[in-house]
Image (cartoon, rainbow, N blue to C red; front, side, top):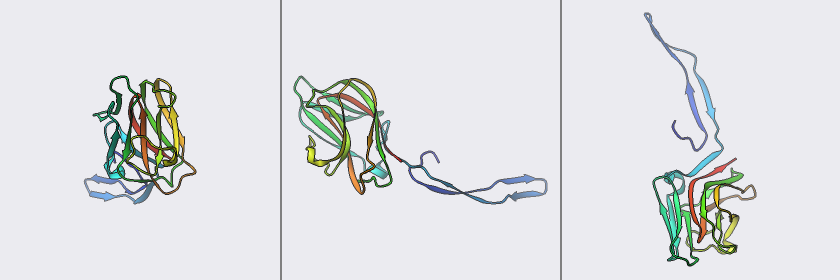
Length: 177
């Protein structure tokens, strides 16, 4: 399979063909357990898991789904906010980490950082502190791999990427064991 987002069970065997005919060897069962779930990967919004992604933005910030990334871009000089969310809640009970990979080319201010995390709603332009179940704040320019410990979370949440006037691109979002 090209992409596995959950455990799968396969039947494995060989077929041997010679002058006498084709013979199937013994059959074995192979169970593949992958404790990782892709939520976004280089343009693929993983709609079978996330339902796709949606945005909530203020004027002065754009959020664009490009062929290889999610781009948060500040327009002008004002500090505006925007958030990209999974359309569906995602069950995080079997996972310990939310990992987000990307680049911050222009960081926001101390009060307007780039944040990744789990939230209880998917409509706010700027998440209130109360809506975040868990959150990691990023304030420095450069490539990043943000790892958020979500081992204390159980049940389903929206996954959110929230920008406070940062110029940021995100290339991968995943849950891992």
